[in-house]
Length: 407
Image 1 (spheres, rainbow, N blue to C red):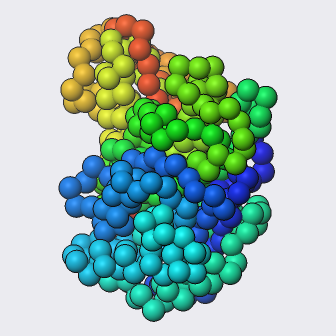
Image 2 (cartoon, rainbow, N blue to C red):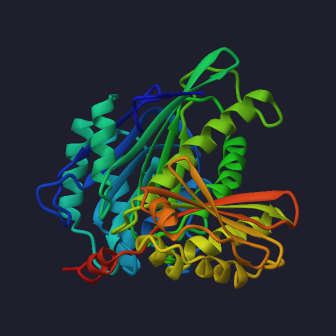
């Protein structure tokens, strides 16, 4: 696998664009398109929140029932959630408008929205935006970048990525873009995540990869413990690379799966590190757990702990907060037989061992916790399983951003 300069439009046959439509924001790009020249198989995962946004319902139906998809239309500023029948009608109208200008079936048009819950979409602006997107779409790094910027809300940076992988002598490309900064606590994937590939792969094989991979990537991040109404991860494959079909149980399947995992994990970590108001990406690596499920549970519990997150922001080596979060996770372990470490910038420090403080230097610990990327390591001494979870510190700015979110 090779990392290349690129984004969502990097695979053969894919085009993208981002334009200003003034859906809610002024003087910034706020609508995006992903378009494939050929029909695509699609796989996806969606929010586990009982309250599902209209575009989530629309996309779930298409992923399950449409023979193929060929485009995605995304708007920011308004989530189209909590909008009743009118909101669903707007999904249909969006698909119909894209269908007309792109000359594809309306059930080949996926939609995505992110922003304020409860507001209705201004369909005149959405329709005009679709016309602009169709005219602007291109197969280029610049168009990929425009699209990735157009789906941002409170994000501070756009998040895009592209890689290539060799499949039986054929170069296959994977592109991605994601957004998310607040209301991040996925139980399936993330706020909005899109992946494209020119690989030849069947729907069942693609679905298996996606469903399994989100468990250890997007499902292992948290910014604030709130699971969004709009969480969506979609992966589209148009087959234009011309490789032999990737089938389950083959080396090619494993190679492609590994590449997808790299893309998803990288994008998930970028979301966690760009949490609203965050100053640091925090990783919790649990090892020596009795089961894989326990390892995931323990790691996620630490990442979700508001007290631990606040301690990281204050560069305070208060390991009691970590121990507490492990203890209420629900996983069984012996607190008298385990170890905790901090690690950053090549320095690793033992802070807790055998039920007590390990006698570390507070000054050195503060230096470690002052880095942009901080790792918490918990060795449970219970078995051989491990897992990683990612989050961020909790700052004053998180409260400010969300106190003013609608104003």
